[in-house]
Image (cartoon, rainbow, N blue to C red; front, top):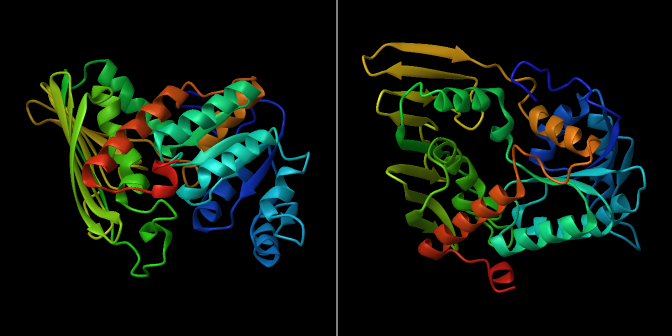
Length: 344
C-alpha cells in the first residue's frame, strides 16, 4: 500500500474475521477492522459468554463464543468455518499457544506484539505456519503507518545525510494494581516485552539491525519496570528508554551528519514529524492517520491473504524473529525470565 491509498478501500474478496479476547486492546482495534470495506466480523471469543455477547453487541460482531461445558470460547471460535483470519489480542504469555491452536485449525493470524515471549517460540510458530501454508503477521502497527513510510523515503534519499544516532523514549505510569497483566510474570509483563518493539523501531529503520545491545533495569517484582538500552550498529549508535513507572517524552530523534528528524509524542503513532537541516532550518510534515491507526496493518494482512501470501513484506517473519532475539538478549542481561517459556 502506498502512502496515498485509503486503507479502508477493498483490495479483494471479503474476509471473515475472528476476534480473540474482549480486553482493552481488542476494543481499540476492532472498530478499525470493521471499517475495512472487505472485512466481516464473524465472531469473538472470551472466557465468559456474557463478555463475548457484550463485545459482539458493542462492535457488531455476528457471533459470540464463551466457554461452555465442553469447550472454551476460543475452541468454539476455531471450530467456526466462517472465520478465516484471527486477530489475537490476548496477553503476551498466551500468544504462543493461541497461535499454534489457530494454525492447527487452519486459520490465518494477525497477532498483537510482543509476538511471543521468546524467539524460540516465534520460530516454532512460523515453522508451523510455513508447513501449513498459512499467513501470520505480527501486529506492530507503527510499521504500517504512512508517516513511517515517508520517513523511510527521506532517509533513503539522504535528507539528513548518513544516520549516525537515534534516541527513542516511551514511558508512562503503569497501573497501580499489581495483578494487572503489565506486572504479571505469567502474562509476560514488564516494559521490555510491552514497549521494546516500539523503541527498537526507529533505530532499526534508520540504522538497520543492531550488532549489539547493553541493557540495565529497575525491577518491580519479577518484571522490569524501567529499562535503558544502548545499541550499537555499524558506525552508529542508539539510546532507548522504556518505562512503566514514569511519564516520558515519548519521542524519537534520528540524527545524521546533515540534519535530524524529530518524531513527536506519541512516537509509535505520530501524525507529524519535523526535519531540521544543519543550518537549523526546519519544516514539518503532516501524515494524519485514518481511524485509530490500526487499519493500515489490517489492510496489509487482508491484501496479503487475498493474494495468497504467507507473510507481509512490510513485517516479514525474519524481522519478527530478529526482534524477538534482541528482546531475549535484553531480558537475559537484565535478569528477567519467564520460566514457563524460557525453559520450554
